[in-house]
Amino acid sequence: MDAEIIRELIEQGLPGARAQVQGDDGVHFEATVVCEAFRGKLPLARHRLVYATLGDLMGGAIHALQLKTITPDEAG
Image (cartoon, rainbow, N blue to C red; front, side, top):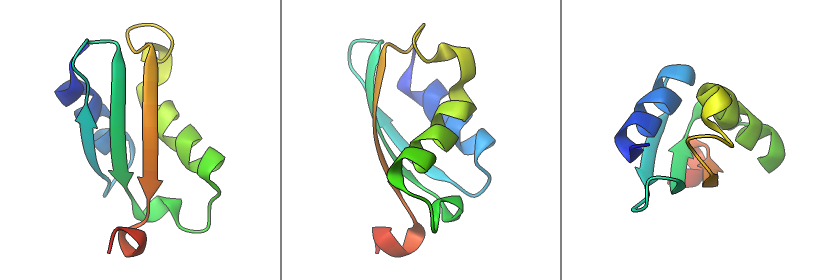
């Protein structure tokens, strides 16, 4: 799996989102996702929104994804 593909999937699945994804080994990734849709949601709900954009890739092609999910206001 490629970090750029993951970024594209997240941004396509969460309209208006901006994502930065890193991962050197092809299975473990870190992502920072900035999205207005996160406003008023707890971290677990925010993570679920991101996981939903990746579907079956989670636990398969993507073994682990560490997330930082913030609103545009939180991003400063």
